Image (cartoon, rainbow, N blue to C red; front, side, top):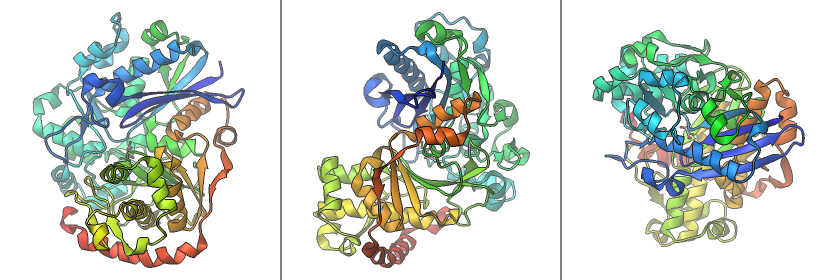
Length: 527
Ligand code: XUL
């Protein structure tokens, strides 16, 4: 029994991998895509259609279904589930799941139905879950700030100013709009703690890592902040799970999963955490020398921090590092969503997208520049999404695919460089992970804009890998350092060195980009 299972419940899919401490192998990579594998839930890129562009919810039952389908795929493929010693997971951050009292009594329920979905459906006090893409709580952010010591106070306590997608403002909105349902809610879980609870059939704690993304937890003390809870919604303290360290075993896997999928009754479930927190571990970035760029549905830029210093501009966040200490993170919503919009607008394949960056355009993009706000942006806060174009008539008129492709990627890299300076991490290396890290063009532009080496890891799903490594560490099997040496490999051909001649183009472009941003921003959006 030396296999450890890492799961990753992201915005668009649930995926898995197993690590073997014995052989150092990473295997059993499976994935369930919410849109295509679970069409009955009507999700589009993992999200339910909403009343406005600012409202983004998902269906927690799709996550339950995905968990069962993923395990079934593993079993059907002959994976010996009985050899899994422990499971941990990673989940999209900030999203919340609202449950009735019956959920906390799940461990005494004798579930005999072939699926957990109808059982959990009856236990939901709110049918849908607001997720990290939601930007609809500006009013609630103001209210929480005004009722407490202001934006700066909430930031000093919780690591972030009140932010639209964070759990606290989302909970407040639910309380204001549906007070009876709020009243009937007995537990509010994060996606991460909900998934861990499903596996054990008991309320799992929220780990400090992901708990820091709620605007409710004192990042230094690892405790709920009473006056912020009060300003958020009445009686909230009783509705929140416990807080705990990320390395805690939260229980054994429930009888239901043993019976249906062949897990051993000794299989431990270890606290789940946020996807970014897990990625920090999965890329081997748990000590402060490394800056990580994760290119997924959202793009994020983060690094470990020994002391929790906050972003003076108010956009960055301090979360918990699962290996201890803190991590600083900036999140950009127009990540793969923006790249896809440009790719689709010009009817390109991903290979053509890359070729246009690498072969047909050069650093600086002949003064063509874009602000890729295709959907409301987080960093910087832009609610009224509208891409902005500056440059030649062809480019502005949408008739230059090559310039458009380079422009979206250069804008993302410049924005990351500009908005990550608060991390104060003078790095010489960027570790790049996530689906779009396969794009050599994207990595080339990152290397040139930051003028540092870009390293790509062998295992692309660093969130699932980090979760599996955390499961192993929590079982006392190995230290972070040896787990990192075993699983976080960078092969020499995956290192992209910066082209020094391109440095000048970006030194010149960055202030122009910042100026265009300043002109475009509606500063009245943030109080
Ligand atoms: C981080 C954030 C996103 C989600 C995506 O603050 O909102 O990266 O975690 O899953």
